[in-house]
Amino acid sequence: MTTTLTPQPARAVAAESAGSRLLWAARDCWTIVLQEFTHLLRQPSTFAWQIGFPVVMVLMFVYVFGSAMDVAGQGAGEGYVDFAMPGMFAMTMALGFMDTAYAVTHNKEKGFMDRFRSMPMASSAPVTGRALSDVIRAGLDLVIIAAVALLIGWRSGGSLGATLLAFVLLLWLRLALIFVGIFLGLCIKNTETAGMLFAVAFPLGFISSVFTPPEMMPGWLGAIAAWNPVSSTATAIRELFQTQGIEYLEPAYWIDGHALTAAFIWPAVIMAIFIPLAVRQFKNLSR
Amino acid sequence: MTNQSAVQARGLVKRYKNKIALDGVDLDVPRGTVHGLLGPNGAGKTTAVRILTTLTDADGGTASVAGFDVRSQPREVRRRIGLTGQQTAVDDLMTARQNLTMFGRLFRLGKTAAQRRADELLEIFGLAEAAGRSPKKFSGGMRRRLDLAASMILAPQVLFLDEPTTGLDPAGRREVWEAVRDLAAQGTTVLLTTHYLDEADKLCDRISVIDQGRNFIEDSPAGLKRRIGDERLEVVVSHPAELQRLEELVVRVLGAEPTLDEAEVRLSVPVSDGVPALTSVAAEIRAQDIDVADIGLRRPTLDEAFLHLTSAPAEPAIKETR
Image 1 (spheres, rainbow over the protein chains, first blue to last red):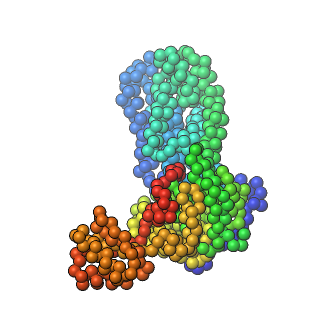
Image 2 (image 1 turned 30 degrees about the vertical axis):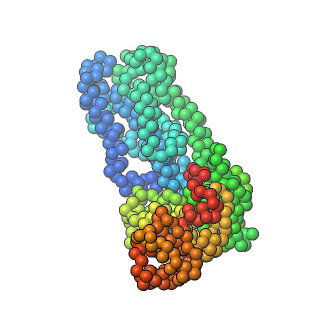
Image 3 (image 1 turned 135 degrees about the vertical axis):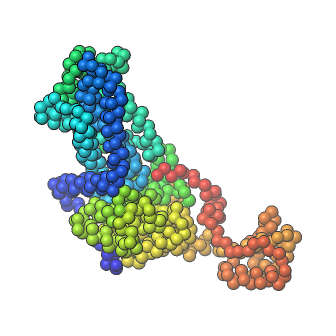
């Protein structure tokens, strides 16, 4: 006992090379990722609830509303799974930023952020670790939702490459929104006020082409919905999955006709805006 | 400087919007000592600790910890300090052991070294039994000890404790005090903040009293208590008419001039040796058959001490923002 608590002379770190710092940053990031996954393993019920929500949404939309929907004259209920699923995928990715924001606020509130910042770890690790673990989580979400979708009859009409590209685009959107989540999470004072995230999440998720084509909304709302980044991803992956029926709708908005390009560019634009904002907010912690 | 001072601060200033949290605070903490920052809420204690632990940038002044400047060499400082903040920063979704292993990894220990260190610390802090449980189910004292253990991964030279016992029950406070004493005995320099006079008294070698962002007094616990004033014997009589008799009695027995509070029918007199004075006065009261509602020894509270020392209210003039 006597030896293990006696202050040890610490090795100076000033001489570390840039390469070794990068290596440590990567390792610290991975340690944070492992922390997140320990949470999942120790709290399988929480994970089940989080994943259960989109699964229930899928089943609800397909069986409750779907039976009344007539996608492009194919007959009531016909083809709705194929129309709704890309929307559900995109929506799950869009709403995921709330989990990110909540986790960031929680860490800040519980003094975790302070503890990390007082430690000799890479200061980027709490952010990069959060981003990486959330992307992995999102991949897991997609696999599970896709499995449920396959069970109830959804099929991708696209090639394997196109289908994989669709999932990459979904994760690309999620990655961009992680930084929105980190920024908002750092702005929010405590987890009690995190409810305000819904005020951002609902318009983002619903004023989009996720459930209804923007062409069927009132003009001004349709324009907003069409230019919503979530719509671009939803429309792009519908094209990649070669969803039947959508070709009957004449794209009324310019961006609708360029969904695939927009699905690449929108998340990049979001990151260009929100990464600097998140970094600034993170630095503000030392004010 | 580097050989004697574990913590040295000169003229630290910190402004929040239009409030001044620190207004030129100086600190000198010699190696291997326990130093208390004592003050009412909002005095600037937490702000000082945040600056010294590299969490917040000062607006003025300089500070070095373990011989390194907190502003220009924060990474060197971080390798040599431990911080236990006001919040117990442990992960409730992991076991105690997983918590310490994770922190060990972030302190750059290898995988097996981190696990070994976690087990060692669990043993030292009396948590070996609880290693596989979530801290969510721990008592307040156990949570704090786990928090302390996480700060001790690298056996830091300087340990910062920000109100380590706030919110703990008496048993929990004793557990934490014991742990801090053990650490100090083995050579860790400890800087702790508290607003409990008895805590500072029990743990610290030196105490800096700060108020409204300024150094107020620095002294040893004994010296501080002398300045604050000695213990007082207080007696409350049942019948106001007997206050006069009591006063005569106290003057005769103790030879000191008491102060009377007619409204509270209370007599109060400073005593240097509390217990003998109490017993002799009590015996005389009994012999004289005076009806007493309450009798006891009191030490001035920190609030009273501030009133006494500053003759200014101990109300927080600056709201602590973090």
